[in-house]
Amino acid sequence: LARGDLAADLAGRHVVVSAGGTREPLDPVRFLGNRSSGLQGYALARTALARGARVTLVAANVTLPAPAGAEIVPVGTAEELRKAVIEAAGSADAVVMAAAVADFRPAVRRPSKIKKSESAGPDPVELVRNPDILAELGERRRPGQVIVGFAAETDDVLANGRAKLARKGCDLLVVNQVGEDLAFGRPDNAAVVLAADGEPTEIPRGPKEALADVVWDLVITRF
Ligand code: CTP
Ligand code: CA
Image (cartoon, rainbow, N blue to C red; front, side, top):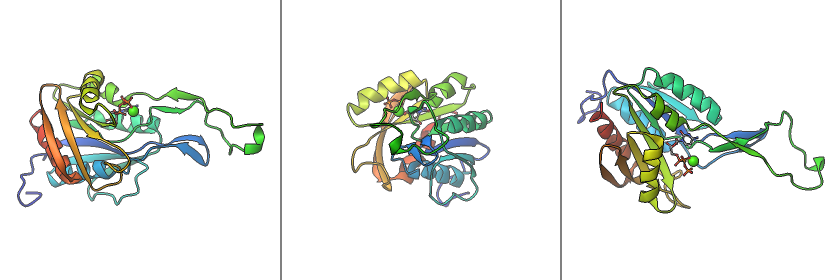
């Protein structure tokens, strides 16, 4: 047994977890980013390792200690995260997209630092869409492969979550409400897991490890 009271019920399985938040550079010193710390993704990786899985952890700008035994693939941008996740997903039984992926990136990545003296006023930053990695995983899914997304919502949490689950073509969507002092950078989390094939599962506020274990329970029943 990998952990006292729990069977190694992910033994022989390869899982891919993305964690953290992407950063989209404007120039060599500036980026557009988000507030994801990587705590939930790392908790998913640790619990999967404890349950016997081989874990590929695609980490976008995370400063947390590496879970022992995980294969860590550090990435910066959404494009880099996409490449790493799609490649690792080729041999994976499950992919969990806990990373916060920037929806847009600056159209131009300037090779040198933008100077305020360059123009009279502040120039607008032109943005372009990033690829939707979760939707692509849903399209490429092999039979038996389980795809899990996370959704951070501030309003109409359940309605937005259901629409998103359908749009992304994933098996499970972990929906949590975010706001000023909810979820980001905190050790605990609360969520509802929506399933493409069944009833929602409420996860009460608790440690991110506890939420992670419920996600793996739900994944395992779908293998
Ligand atoms: N995601 C992704 N690629 C993107 C954007 C998001 O793979 N370009 C993934 C996230 O990792 C997460 C899920 O999609 O698992 C939901 O992310 P979210 O930002 O809530 O969904 P969006 O479709 O981007 O919708 P919106 O931001 O408009 O709410
Ligand atoms: Ca988004």
